[in-house]
Image (cartoon, rainbow, N blue to C red; front, side):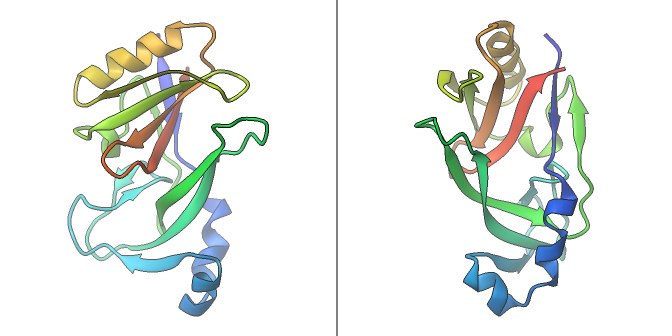
Length: 155
């Protein structure tokens, strides 16, 4: 089962980078600069950004279905210079070598299945989940902090 993942659209976040730090604070966001290699996963590019890169840390609604008890939002990083990443049949770089919580949802945004995995095991679980016709998509979260990482769909 071939799968794909696409980062969030950069255009949706671009206006936020024009806000002052004070205005960002009023919406519960903050400007940060990557100060450590491999520590800041951008949800637009689906890569980890280099040291010195400007990012916003903000809340993002990643499962908006109002009719689902699983509707959810959480913190994400987005980079000012990022372009929307697209990966087909492979894990995005920021997901490789990370402990992930994989959550499979149906069309009604109800959870069908969930597993925790890392490394080579992730692809096998994603493919198994997506082989189930009941599953509409898989959301990957960083297991340790619980933050939304990426949506994975059939290609």
